[in-house]
Structures are given as C-alpha cells and as structure tokens.
Length: 148
Image (cartoon, rainbow, N blue to C red; front, side, top):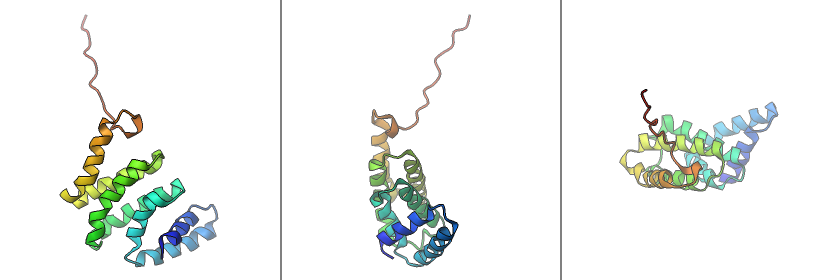
C-alpha cells in the first residue's frame, strides 16, 4: 500500500460513520501486514496535510514500535529519529507535537545512543528557543520567602 493510500485509510478512520471506520480498520490490518507500512507512516508525519492524520500516524507508529522494534528494518531504525526531529521542527499543531514527542521518547528509549543524535540536537535547540511552543517546560524555583 502506497503512502497516499495509507493517508486515505487514516483519514477514513477519522470519519464519523462507523461502517467507514470498520472498513478502514480492516484495511489497516492488511496494511500492517506489509513490512513497509512503518516507513510509510514515518513519511506521513510530515507529508499529510491534515493534522489529525499526522497525529494518528504518530500514534500508530508508536504503538507499532512498542512490540515490533526488533522486527523493524535496521535502515528505518536509523532514519526514524531524524524523521521525528524534522516533523517536530515543522509541526505547528500542539496535539500533533505531543504525539510526536511521545514517539520521540520511545525512539530514545528503544534506539539507544544512535537515536540521541538528531533528537538530542532538536531538544537542545528547542530548549533555548525564545518561542514558547518550542521551549521545554521550565519550573523555576519559587522565590525565597520572607520570614517575619
């Protein structure tokens, strides 16, 4: 299944019609039988025009990697951290960024030192960025209290 077909399938999962969702779910089961589906989901992280499809692609990819990390192609394991860092860099939607951050955390945990290169660079750049959406949540210590 090509990436545009997978994108249509994910968009169908977001429809309010339960019959359409059932057909899309069956199609998704067939798509996950193909070993190229995780790579295609990775492409949808940046290429899909709908934010809901990008978010769903990130969630499905994360769920797939939870149980199938060792079965993933070694080339894709090396490319995924850079793909996620690129998607995080250009993503304007908060909900999609959260899903991408969760995927990135899984990659850092499962990928070991190799995943830290692109994702670690992105984290350091984001933490120092003056724009609030890219900054880490910082908790400054409370100011000292005066004792009377």
